[in-house]
Length: 515
Image 1: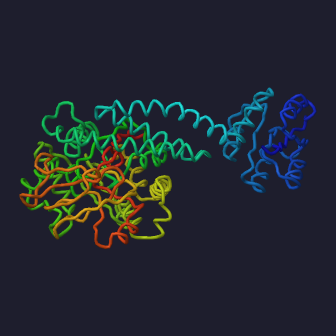
Image 2 (image 1 turned 180 degrees about the horizontal axis):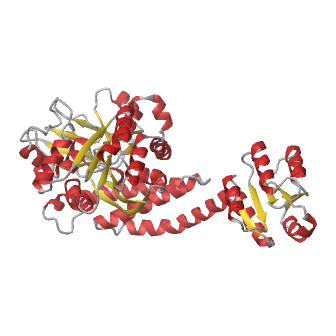
Image 3 (image 1 turned 90 degrees about the vertical axis):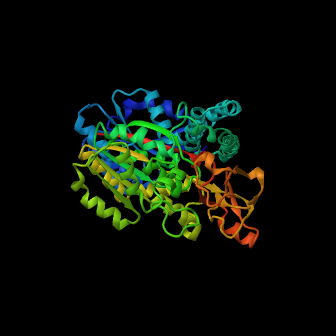
């Protein structure tokens, strides 16, 4: 480690000689300054790693010196030391972005702690995080072999996402690679669990997880009945993406509930989102609302009637609410709702579908610049975070808080970065999705898919009597033998959904209270 250079500014610097000797014995290089003016001269002559600055000095005060330092070298950490506990001094110092604030008399260990906190934080956090994950690794590996319920799988996925977010910024890339391999193993086991358990979830409601078609009735409606609610469905939002932008809500809302629920199969908008708003499984939608439901092979938009589905569900549940529905697919539409949001202040329910994240994931396939910007899950999260921070949606949410609305944020399905192709052959009417296929006479590699030869058992419509569904496992994607190499190179390392993975199936449902 290179020598750390400290500038200590105090008009009574001789009284601090024991502290300085203490630091020098630990190989810190300490430069002394008796005034703010002298400190500024030293800063212009040489580069320091950190400054300890007395607040009460003749001539330039500590606050004035701090402002000068920040103007000259904005990123230089400054620790303010003062005898005063006056609140306004603290506020001024904090407002000027100090690194730390110490009250005299300070002891040497306080100084050492401040140094480590400000200069060694990244290294110390990295070492601690790596050590903690190493300990947790074995437990996760053991737990993976024993999981046997939908609740345990949610806990496991939450744990893996936690470690993914903890490890993404550390220097040890090897640890992150180990986590990735553990996630891959988890997805293999999760697919086995879904294959075994998913059809059973429709036999009775007892002990089953919340699914897309039960979400509104069981989770959303009880909230609306207690307090007016802004219900936001962000298309294609993964749990890790929610965790990435959650901090931006802390000023307006406090979290009441954070849980995960299970998307129905296929994990595709046409099926899962329509299911949320209708409260029905796809085969029931086809039967009860043939004018609103379109199968894969039918022409036209597949999610054009969510408002109608929601209206029918509310009628079926016997709920007469003052409500509105808004689908946002562009910046212009988002700004329009933001500008007019107060006109809905007396609504019991405002339902908003926000399409940006789904559009982002599809853009990664189609646009080279997005491929560069979202090449990994980490950069994909960062891009989502940046969008949310600057979107009309955040403004809408902040307005909702001021108007006393409860906030629900959820999604219809997640997505996964696909890496491995698997060949599929079907007739000319085979569906086009890369993570699921429906049609007749499907030919595929059985080890790479989950198969439903009788779609009625999982409440999916059948286009004809011999139609079946197949779902890609983990991070596989379907490729046709024709122009295989071109197809693979185009879609590899893109975000897709419709299949079976933890990222697609287990998705966030968040309830927040206005502050």
